[in-house]
Length: 331
Image (cartoon, rainbow, N blue to C red; front, side, top):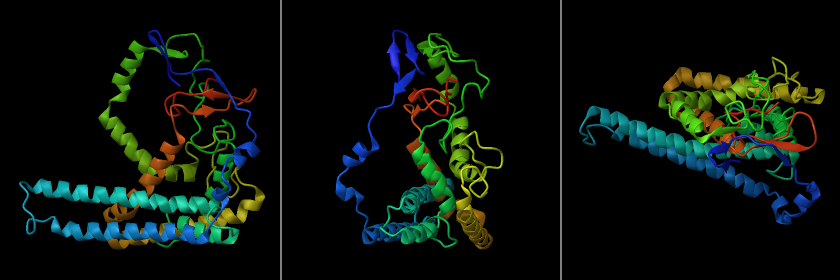
């Protein structure tokens, strides 16, 4: 939370008491009809999302050949390339949006919210997230379902959270936080210094574009493969494809293996598609919309300048941060 104190802006502050509200009270405040699960209604969302994606693809494929001097006059050859780029960028946005809907439906299967049947939920979720069919969005269903449940159970806990865990000051070799010190190592930064920092770091188009592209296209695979941005107390080798990773219990072993086999089959189908159609085509049609929206929406949903974190030790208080990616826990 940002607070103005004369000429000083607070960017890191103290503790936030956890509201003492029982889970039962929270659940009781939710209308009963919100807990009803309809297989028919859930299934219609799947068909609708794929129908819209198909329509967008057919529309873009039909318009692409028309961006040609034989059909339309444009003042310069580069304008044709720009218009074609705009067409497929619009395609990427549209299919990515509804493709994220497919990802969310698989996510709901993992939460057993798709239907009343656990078997149906897991079958549908595996098909949507993991299988080598065109329906998959490249997520190891059971592996991620298990770690994601831990994420919900320990959201924003420094040693239990599974994703988007910030670095502590000590991990970055910074000195302990001094609440009253008004400089870059303290809790407050003057308006003048803040503007200087923004001028130096906040308006770098090349850096922003490069970082964003890398983050959107590689962030999700890096998290699944190498636990990037995940729980930092886990050892090297932690991965959603390693059934011996610390976030999994022995009973999860077979489910992680099945998910890994499914992703291997999915990756093989992607490689086959690239072999027959070329990397550029597969990237535009499938990879960029899938990876970009999965990572982008997940990070936007999970990160905020107002994010609260549980400290590593001490009483049940939350430490407030001014941003997961820029600042660090004061320990």
